Image (cartoon, rainbow, N blue to C red; front, side, top):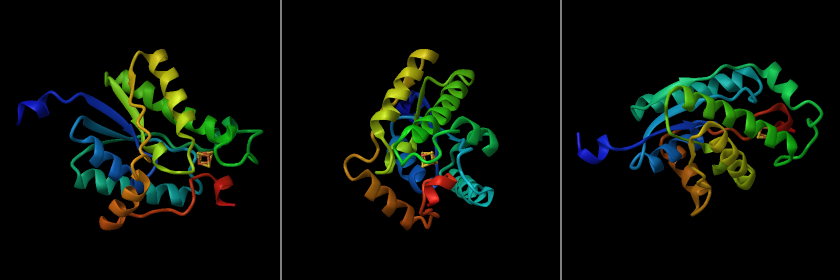
Length: 183
Ligand code: SF4
């Protein structure tokens, strides 16, 4: 093993789907030892969740990356966003949803003694990268960790992610995840 590889810091990467996760993993792998975390209780229905998880498992294996699977409790997720169901994408419902997934990632990073954490969420042009950054920075302070605040859609990141996933024949969904984003 090269010396530089041995010195790479660990980073816990929250993956919302592998359509974006494969590109971000490839982008970060030169600088970090990556561990993937699939925690997405927002996804509805369960069949869709299973498809996205299976794709994440397949690519994690192909890329030789460790993958940690979070719980799936959609009922609890619905309780968290109660009252905000009708909000448009990027509204309060989404901010609660980002926070829930990022906080779970930060907690896990703390438990596993992984200094860095981030999420693939910012790849999508439908996501509010600034809100994601603000939440990540608050969690960084709360858990005494480092949040990597890259906006992965920058420099044509979204286009690159789409191309990357097409080249690897990775499933890409046509809605964000929850039932309210399917409308
Ligand atoms: S649209 Fe996406 S980010 Fe917003 S609440 Fe639904 S699943 Fe979460």
